[in-house]
Amino acid sequence: MQAIRVREFGEPDVMKVEEAPDLQAGDDQIVVQIQATGVNPVDTYIRSGTYAVKPDLPYTPGSDAAGTVSSIGSGIHHV
Image 1: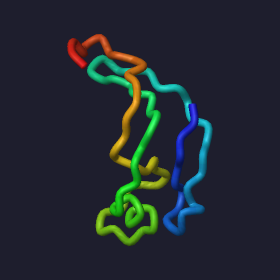
Image 2 (image 1 turned 135 degrees about the vertical axis):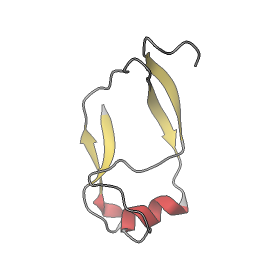
Image 3 (image 1 turned 60 degrees about the vertical axis):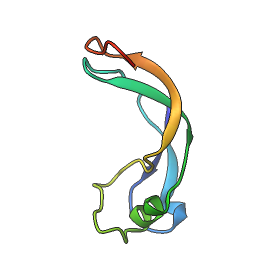
């Protein structure tokens, strides 16, 4: 699978598409294959390093997404 990763804070060009391992759901998890995502103002602040709380690097930006459930853990009974 591919993922957008940020390895340093800065301008939009710090976002890079990288190969990432396919994910498997743990017992109490689901995996969603993301097909669309939105960019909020807070995402740009985090990426630029100006947001008050900074994620550990590297990180995958975005918090609003839509997709298809591709894997369901054994402890999940309703999605």
